[in-house]
Amino acid sequence: MARNFKRIETKLIHAGEPRPRIAGAVELPIFQSAMFEYAGETSYHDLKYIRLNNTPNHTALHEKLAALENAEAALITASGMAAISTTLLTVLSAGDHLLAQSCLYGGTHDLLTKDFAKFGLTFDFIDADDRHSWQAALRPNTKAIYVEAMTNPLLEVADLRGVVEFAREQRLVSIIDNTFASPINFRPMEIGFDLSLHSATKYLNGHSDIVAGAVAGRAAVIERITHKLNHLGGSMDPHAAFLLNRGLKTLALRVRHQNQSTLRVAQFLESHPSVARVNYAGLETHPRHERAHELFEGYGGVLSFELKGSTDRAQDFMNRTTIPIIAPSLGGVQTLLTRPATTSHSGMSRDDRLRLGIGDNLIRMSVGIEATEEILEDFEQALA
Ligand code: PLP
Image (cartoon, rainbow, N blue to C red; front, side, top):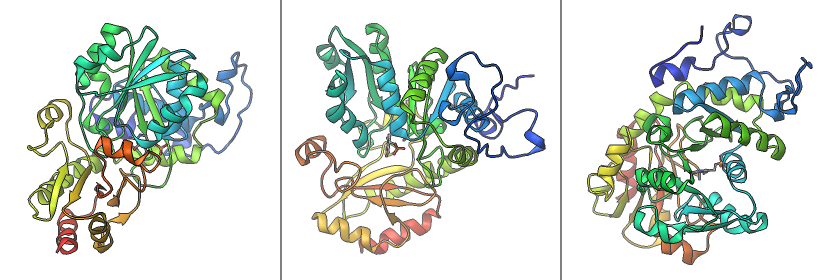
């Protein structure tokens, strides 16, 4: 009998897991076999082969992720960028136009600005907070609108309900990168998004030991994206799939701890005399706090801030901390610090970066699951 798990904590453990259990194994084993015996399949896409994303490790995760996002179907990919590029190349064809939020993850920004033209695709950046401006950017060939749940690294929360309404009115495919929120804090399908994307490298896996991606949405679109992925080849390795399935089991515990810990760090920084600005939607002073409160169940584990003084002062502070690791990326169990100007947004021109508000001295923090008190003590000594 198909089992219908109601709560996300239970889905994380049981959704998609094979029944009966394989040889009784409590944990889904790794199917490290490139190909499987031919069993009379009639379609290329149904042949059992790792690149076709259909080993038991893949199919269990597809079902689990769909359950977590409350979507009809989901697909795992070799990286977040594989999910993003394959989705965009499925939804858009040569000659099509995309509306995209202006402050995007650096890799996605580069894909649009550096590669889109070669595929005959065009785009315009929009202020995803100003719904009155979108109509002007619309063209007869506009096919989709693309936003992020919380922007990286400024943690802005766009008018996401407005995006869904606009997409419906204009018959556009609405796509959201839900990496920063994770399905614990936000499930975009529930407010009407068509497709939700993830860098599963971040919260979904949560242990900073694999690169992975995911996309969730309606079954018919996911099937088209799957076929595109089968051609482009950005499939996930079964060992990475095994680790992702293991990591997912603690997602709710990790993310809820990170929500609480990050709010405390944000409050500490906001009240510290050396800090000029803190970006975190959980703070009541954040301009979009009310909106974030209405949309999300938690405000996530990433914040960014600027210290008073020069870029050297920011770098010096980072070097003086002892608990965080100075490294790009986010969403793992370890607290990480980075200056986006030198990492995630280094591909962008300095002028573009500054125009978006990403200064050289901006520090992004991904809060791990260490003791909050100890992180605060460490920050106190590093700021002294
Ligand atoms: N989307 C967001 C919001 C990200 O932060 C990242 C990576 O940092 C990506 C997508 C790309 O994911 P990946 O590095 O897994 O390809």
